[in-house]
Amino acid sequence: MESLSSLNVFVHVAETRSFVAAGRILGVSASAVGKSIARMEAKLNVRLFHRSTRSVTLTAEGSLFLERSRRIVAELEAAESELLQLSECPRGRLRLSLPQVSSLLLPVLGEFMRRYPDIELDLDFTDRIVDVVEDGFDAVVRTGQMADSRLSMRKLGTFHHLLVASPAYIEQYGAPAEPADLPQHRCLHFRFPNSGKLEQWPLPGYQDLTLPVSMVCNNIETRHCFAMQGLGIACLPDFSIRKELARGQLVKVLEGYVRRSADFYILWPSGGYMTPKLRVLIDFLSERVFPENAELALTCPN
Image (cartoon, rainbow, N blue to C red; front, top):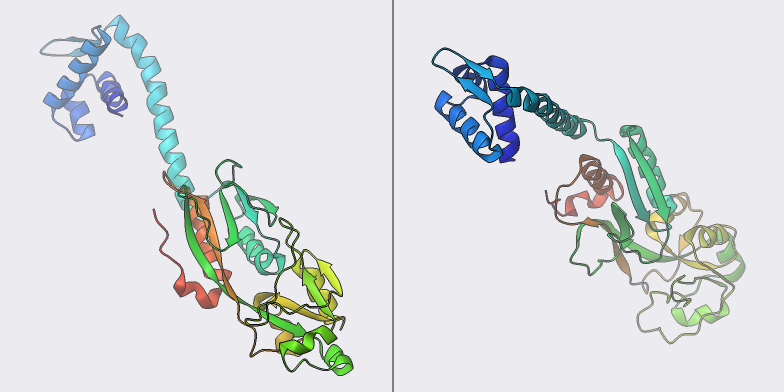
């Protein structure tokens, strides 16, 4: 940076042919300008200016050096201008890894695209564990915290699991009065793609209960769809069924027995400069994914 500053001084002296005039433009004294030029000449081991009491003119070497220096200073000014524009209008490509919960994230990301049309989203939906840094992601959204000192994180919000069924199912099979009644019901299950294990339903004190398996899948949408069709009881996150519960299309079962909540986080590589495009994404998701929990979001570091 000191060399770039010296180049800037050199270009101004060459263009004004005056240490005084260059200093006035740069906001420093003529003496400071002269010392900067002297240090540059000593470093390059060449004389850049002929000096007299009446004028300052370029040497042949100085004229040659001026051509390249102007290009360097112009590139630096262009880079600074570009960064300033980015801070005002974020743009560029953002590569994100997201969990397979499209009902939660897609509406918000669609709104984000409308708000920031110059940002290109590259979305990878997966529930597998990714290495944010090594896999080249700008950010990931996951449930639970990731123990990685290379990452910064912000909490997006909290959600709860519920056991639900349709009114048609309840009419046909009845509602379980306690977890011990579940073996007589049809249960729609989730299998973790990484381990192949079935998700344990959030019923503290009944973890040894063997539940019947009427259907197994590895996403929310299928369980949601089949529960709506009256095909069984499903364990689903509350954010995926809010409208259906409000409309009476699904009803909660065993509400007093269910105990499980989890947090969503957005994580990104820590350290260094945070680009404007990443900053606006983090702020946008924090405000809109769980708007009722927005006040709980952690302060985003610079």
